[in-house]
Length: 170
Image (cartoon, rainbow, N blue to C red; front, top):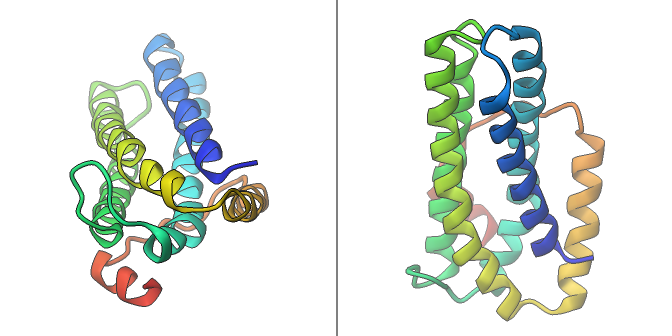
C-alpha cells in the first residue's frame, strides 16, 4: 500500500463522481442530491486526511517538484486549494439541486478541484514518490486509509491558514 497511490485513487473517484453529476437528468434532484452529498463529504474527508497525514510528511521529506521550489511552497498552494474547494462545496449548498445556479456552483467546485488535482499530481505526489521510502509511504497509507474509513460520512470542513499550517508542521 502506498499513500501516493491511495491519493491518486481518490482523485479518480472524485473525477468519476463529478462526471456522474454531468450525466444525471437535471430533473432527478434526488439522484443529484445523493451523488453530490457523497462527493461533498468525500472531498472534505480527502482534504482532511491529506492535511493530517500526507502534507506534514511532505514538509519533512519533500524537496519541491513541478514549478514549486520546495515542499513548503507545494503545501502552501495545496492548503490554499483545499480552502477554495471547501468554499466551492459550501456554495453548492446555497442552491436547490438541479437548478441552473446549483449546476454553476458544482461546475465551479469541479474546476477548483480539477486544478488542484493536476497540481498535486505533478508537484507534491511526484516529490513524495522521489523522496519518501516505500516503508514511509506504506505507513502513511495505513494511517490515511484508517482516517478515511473512520470518517466515511464526512468531517467538519474547516479552512486553514496555509502559513500557520506550514509553521505548525515543519
